[in-house]
Length: 328
Ligand code: HEM
Ligand SMILES: *[C@@H]1O[C@H](CO)[C@@H](O)[C@H](O)[C@H]1NC(C)=O
Ligand SMILES: *[C@@H]1O[C@H](CO)[C@@H](O)[C@H](O)[C@H]1NC(C)=O
Ligand SMILES: *[C@@H]1O[C@H](CO)[C@@H](O)[C@H](O)[C@H]1NC(C)=O
Ligand SMILES: CC(=O)N[C@H]1CO[C@H](CO)[C@@H](O)[C@@H]1O
Image (tube, rainbow, N blue to C red; front, side):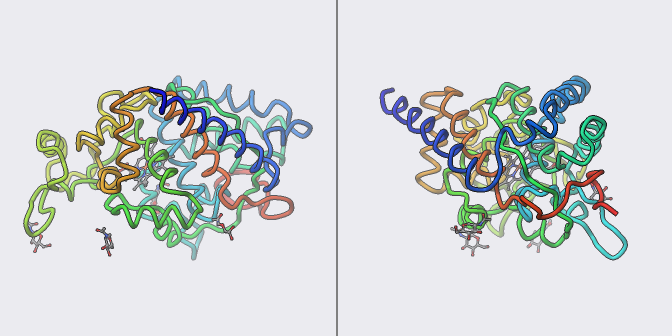
């Protein structure tokens, strides 16, 4: 108990150090639009309220969109750009086929443009929509540093190269995160985002059928859970959606870690967290002391870091007028 409290204290102080450092070094700040668009947070909040009232499952999709944006060319809204004749955009890449929330980002952007034309970037709107989503399903509420500008390049091949695959092992995941200057702590903490949302069968069906030459089913998968997934996902099923945290699929909490610790993590990448002692200990700590407080403090730190991967600032990039295309 005492150790956990010390751990929590450390997490909280690391957080404030980080906010301070990142807020000053890279040109982003929570007050960025104070003069140029003072109501931006209210406008986004109002739109998000409508969006999630209509469909709460978009909370997970908008969080994932922020992740996919930031892991390719930094958080520059490149994930939102449509393909053009001669260029397959990130959206066209396999990992993006299941992304959702584009229309909703367009809706928020239109509302912001109506009040502050040409001021607020699509990249900031994605970051704010992700934060609002997390807060709305019971997760931590944190202040988002703003001032990212929008990129003008989006390449499908870069999504393939940068977005980690669900069949990655620990080494592959760790290396993938390290390329973004994210640590193994960030990896195990941000994987906790899988406490909300769904996956389609192809993301994990290799674990259920013909897994290896010696095992049809991934031996690291809980047998009962494997049978349940086989029932949900018959061979060849590409459309069924399965929750990643089936205990509380629409609530941001530590139940993801409880499931992973019981070999009920849906992806190989979730199960891989148990194969390294440090991340295994982190997963297990939530089974011994299932409090959201520590996870939330850690998540806040790591998602703020993720949200500040290689931002475009100053005169770099542009402020797009619509999020799906570069300015004419
Ligand atoms: C660690 C490496 C990661 C891998 C391999 C991974 C992989 C995946 C896959 C395969 C899906 C399901 C896609 C589908 O079939 O529909 C998914 C969903 C999701 N991921 Fe991850 N992910 C990772 C990290 C993250 C991070 C860092 C975040 C956010 C901070 C995140 C947030 C989500 C969310 C919220 C969903 C549900 C989306 C929805 O319901 O629409 N993931 N992820
Ligand atoms: C992880 O996957 C890579 C690429 O397939 C492989 O070279 C490596 O040996 C694997 N590492 C572990 C620990 O299984
Ligand atoms: C990671 O850190 C190194 C060294 O500070 C820096 O050169 C590099 O641009 C950073 N990469 C990202 C994606 O932030
Ligand atoms: C199982 O995998 C092996 C090796 O990849 C392949 O040769 C075989 O055809 C597969 N069997 C089925 C039933 O898919
Ligand atoms: C969500 C999304 O934009 N999906 C797109 C992924 O790419 C394919 C092929 O380009 C499009 O048809 C989808 O609309």
